[in-house]
Length: 236
Image 1: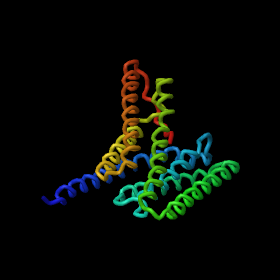
Image 2: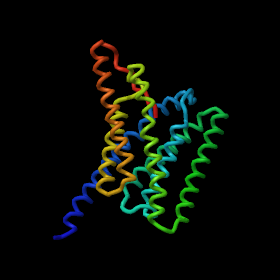
Image 3: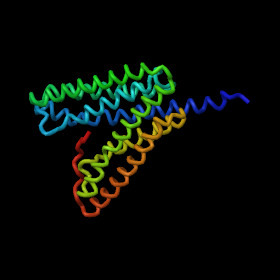
Image 4: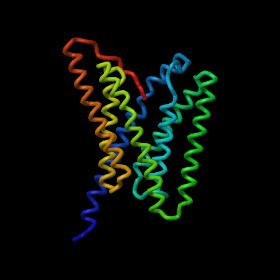
């Protein structure tokens, strides 16, 4: 029996899942745009924090490096999504620095340099590992840990929603994009037999479901008491 007959459909499904994940991830990447429109309009970063963008670019860079052929095979979609993500996050960081106060500017510049230095050390260090399997495990665990912590970050927002019974800080479109992106890359990882991709994204899928369940639960309760729809506020 032709082995390619089995490999072909899995390869196609993997590519479809990867493309879908890239599309849904775009929804996450553009979510801070309303925040930066306000920053540009007011020419001030106000009380907004730049730390989420610093962490996000580090996560994108680590996962980007994991997806390259130097570390793992057949992960082109991981490279594309994280390349785009890194460009978006760098753009946000530059805008934040431009409109921040002097003290915050210096802090953000310092953190950006730290992130780039850490990434350079990871790349240079992993290239010193001659065994490709060991290198794959080393970078894989780093990317997996980074993704898990990123997907776990909404736990604070989930706790806030439960305590306040308000959806103000958990906009629907952002929760939906998180779920769809995580689910798509979970499938991508499964079809590529890559635990470093499907495990963290599986966790992200579960957390995405939790956010959607909470949204519909409190949205229904709000509708029942005739309250207004909360303002959509970007928390990324």
